[in-house]
Image (tube, rainbow, N blue to C red):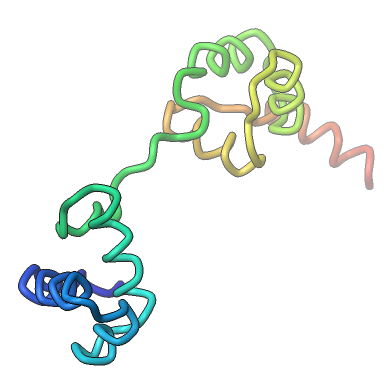
Length: 128
């Protein structure tokens, strides 16, 4: 990931634009991309600051706040599948995202959704 432009360069670029250069001309003069200069000038007009925006950070899990529903589903319906959990969440008006999202949330909470071993063996015996 690229680092933000230095504060000194940001101020010189904005100064050039304020003195009459276009953002593209200032970008060429200071050897930065035109898009970086245009975005910087837009940011200064909107916020009045040349400080860079936040880079990266933590994103809140998609199913945060619905942990109790997931605990209830896995406790009351032993052997529930991820697809069944997704359907139950959708019935409650919760957009769960993908099955992988549900799996990661269950894993983070330490919950299990797997079918019992006896049930799996019975299925395997039926296929033979």
